[in-house]
Length: 569
Image (cartoon, rainbow, N blue to C red; front, side, top):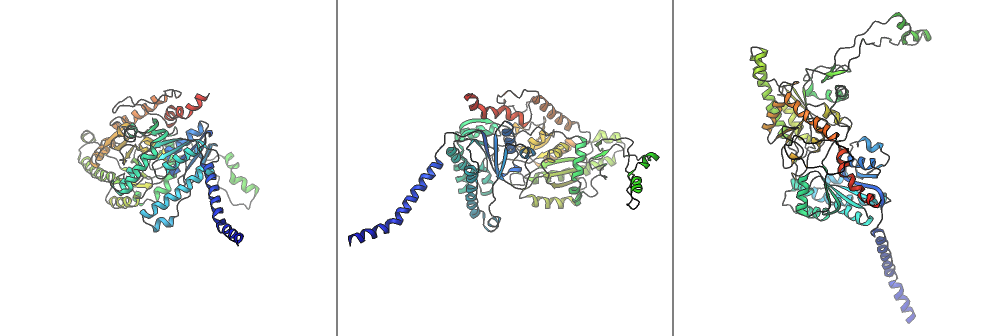
């Protein structure tokens, strides 16, 4: 009886014992897996974007620079349909790892407050899988873009401790300030996001900042621990002012897209591909030369008839040219204004539309004055003419449809201005910037601590800019040196008139462009092997330096990532 009871008690507790043993084994295995490692794979980096890789230029440039300096480079983010820069597909050390998107059905069915936690859980699982499983050897560095902040900062902090990787946070903006635009600064989620960003962003091997203002603010606010370096955005070396030939080829490629824009019919100068575009033309149309008897005998048509009488005739009258002329800019072209936008609430596109309305009214007024002038000399002495203005807006975003509907209504009454929205491939975007006469930036920054990358791209292409003023804009745009700064749509309208009057002869605009070219040349003459941090340029300093991403990265980040290696040697 006692033996039976003992056996029964044992079988009763056997399942519990198995569960305890299994749980203990799981805990030990998990501890072994998560146990901090003291070694990692040298000369390797994982770059976490948590956004569309193709729309994250700064992180793509980071990946290219790491790879060109001998680092095995994994770049992790979403495939949003935008092509990455060609270098990432060409360099053998670069591996692009796309994260899966959360189910679109849930986004459509659930409100933001319910969908957000599901999205975060999905992101946590997919990021940990890539960083802990897909990347077999622990990377020496993990470079993370912030924002977005939740959950990336916490995950990178955890993985850095688990795998022994050095974490570098690249501060583009503040995540909680962007969330506050949507929910309000007093919302509980914003307060949680602020605590989260401060908690997991405070400690890192190094912090990179897009402005001195952001560095100073975060060091004071959160007492950031780790090395702190300002890395201003700069364009890559292939950004440049476009030649007439490049402009010609670009607008031949854009012809199908422009033809679909009904508002442009009758607005742009007539053109005939491949000899002319709305902005360019050949100096002389090709002149056909009558073929000689010998050339007729050697023609394809003649040989076809001889070799195969039944063959259909092939034209031999392919034109020969008396001379070949390269394209040049048309004197009757419209002025080209370019603005890039993400179509989000932190960029008030309405400012530009209001300014264009004022420009339209002023152009009509001046056209009337010109008609009333007795002579051309009187006209030139009284007021300068304004050109027709073609405005091309690039980018994607949630507010695009709302604003473009407003544009369609306004353009029904406009004679001097047309505004179209285009999406360009990565290789065409810098050519468009280099083709433009003037750029406009509406970026206002949720934190007033970051700088617009679009202006950086414009400067790299030698394009002066009119930029909306905010806290630290002076670190990039020097008013009346490389661009103009405005606060209202009325000020922007005045600047457009001032810079474009007399087009294509625009001395004020030419001065701004010359300043950009001079600054770029001065920077290029600086030896790139000097790895000291750049000295801040005071606002208004006319001897400011520009340069490429490669020069700036080599001067600031390269010493940081190679410092430990150099000490070991």
